Length: 166
Image 1: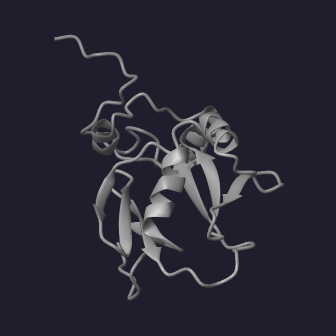
Image 2 (image 1 turned 120 degrees about the vertical axis):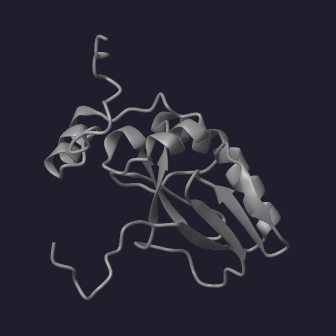
């Protein structure tokens, strides 16, 4: 394989959101999501996402985001829609489930089942989310890229495979 002189971007470790107040941000996001904190100080808090995290950082001063956003993957998009409604948060009109937090950060909610993004089985296990699956379209997209579960990995047997008789 020919190596490129440039590094390859391979994922996102975390995203930092600027908020007005860390405690208020934790209360707001706590009304929307079940989460665990990785750590916290007076000016920052770290929401655990398994092998990734969201950093809430005190200091938002810019106007609300319009097009700039990030996609946050959830285990149940319809439960998220209900949580937004229960918290009195109005989604942004459009084809996606987007909302803004009180500090103007725009977040698009994406269902795990409907996208290529995949947590490693050990991470899902550690998060208590081994029941999550991909829909047919997401499975097809992954397979087309050679990324289907068990595809190209002879050391693993897909979870759906029949056991090998002894």
